Image (cartoon, rainbow, N blue to C red; front, side):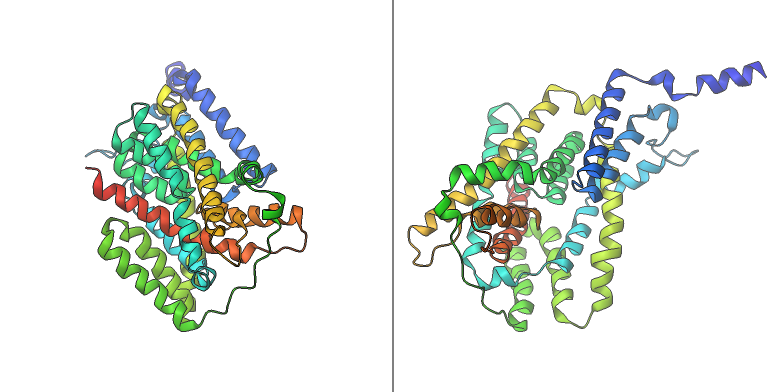
Length: 378
């Protein structure tokens, strides 16, 4: 009896607990508080935080991360992580996003495509800065994608280029997405005047059903042939959108936008959290990733605004430069922030629908940049 009791005590995970584990669990509790109390991306941060807690209770005692052997099956999280490390989860997320996204605002004003592309400058800035600070090209590319404010794309590139930093890159990307209402407004106000923020834009033109159906097909063909490495993401995004717009596949739209998207979001986020271990997160490189992430995000926001101001030098009908900040691909959060900032100056100004153009263009743009990185960096 005493021996059995001793074995039970020795099996307790307290025996392997480290200071790093305690810090990571504390960070997870902060994320949970922020998600629940502040309603900051709860669908993402809650499973990420739980994954962090599960992985930082010493896994050598829980067995939850154990690889399978010839005699024993693997741990629960090991199996769940396979969809992450094989790159299956991010394209499935894009399928759901496509089924939820209305591209008509982008189609009605093609100029917004360039605003979405301009915001990708943040990726380039972070990529070059990361490489200057000593990271190799692959890790620099993975860090740079954070600037696109696109969690699935950040994860997709990180699984290919920097799996050892996957957890911290993903947590940084999703954390900054949840902080959009805090990060973007000061940059918007700094780079625009009150007069610019008050610019009213005419109602977008009506887009025909034919245009909505042709758009995803054209995008798939162009991206597929010119940037084939981006096709897993863009292809699934456009499949979801075509299902939405064709009008004859409502069950598939519902499955993509609800059941698949919600299920994969839980599995992806849980997997991401479970890779955020203390031995990776609490390092000099880990802290650099966090700092470079904010540089990337701020640069992307600024680039979109400045490009919109540049266009206004030549346009008779001016565009509100705030919509340029929505070029980061956090749909629809950054569009809502642009709308809020505009209405602080003019309560009757509605730019949300215009901001959605560069917003959805940013989703495509960040996936294209990811494909370029994957094609060029070996």
